Image 1 (cartoon, one colour):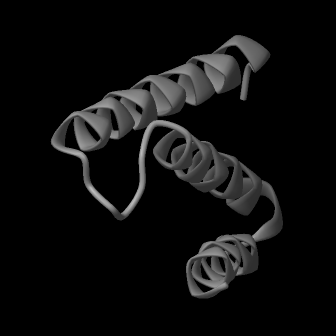
Image 2 (image 1 turned 180 degrees about the vertical axis):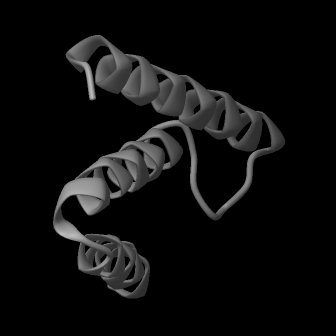
Length: 72
């Protein structure tokens, strides 16, 4: 995969996470906000990109990391 395509996917992921985070801040939700959603979407994108090369276990590890952050 080209480097520009990877950065494009990461940029789209960041933009969508920021939009959802801004909406959640505007509604004043207690769950997450403008910092949390972009981090989670970037983590998901990176795990999906790494999963293409290393297999599906990377996606499971990413999901476990997000679950651990929520639990702690």
